[in-house]
Length: 202
Image 1 (tube, rainbow, N blue to C red):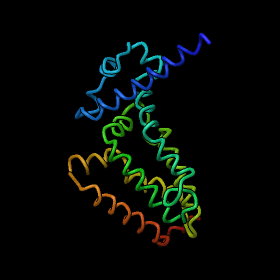
Image 2: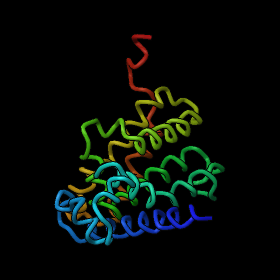
Image 3: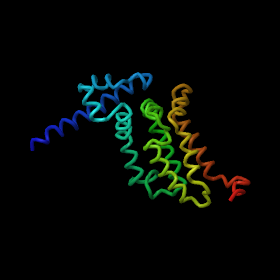
Image 4: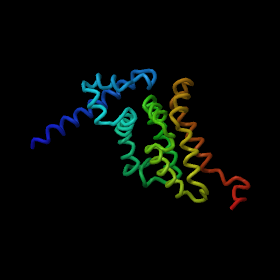
C-alpha cells in the first residue's frame, strides 16, 4: 500500500506536465521558444521531476505527440472505415494520409518541434516508422503496386511537418483545400501504372 501514493503522484505529475506543455506549444509562435524550465514552471513541478519522467526535451515531445496520437492509432488499428482495417486498400491509403495531415494541421508546432528536434533524421523517428510500415502494408494489398516501400515514403513526404507549416502557416492555405489536394495527389499515384523503363534493371 505505501508504494501507491508515489505512483499516483508520478502519474499526476506526468499528466500535469503534458497538459502544461500542450498549452505552451499552442501559445508560442516558435516551438524553440518553449523550454523545459517553462514547462516545469507551468506544471508546478521541479525540473528534476521533468527530466526523471521524460529524460530530455525530445522525450517529452515524443510523449506529448504519442498522447495526442492515441485516438488516431486506435481508429487505424481497430476502428470502422475509412481508417479501420476492413476498408478497401486504395480508400484506406487516402484515409490514412488524410489522418496524418489533419493530425499535423491540428498539432503544427508540436509536429514541427518533434521532426526538427534531436540529432537524427525525422525518417528514423519511431512515429514515422510506424506510419510508413502501416502505409506500406496497405499498399502491398493493392494489385500491381510494384514498390510499396518507396511509394509509402513518397506519399508521407507530402505530410512532412515543415511542408504543412509552410502551406498552413506561411502560405495560409485553407485546410479543406490542402486535404483535397493531398487526396487528389494520392489518387493519381495509386492509379498510375508503372513508368516506362521501370523494370529495365530487373
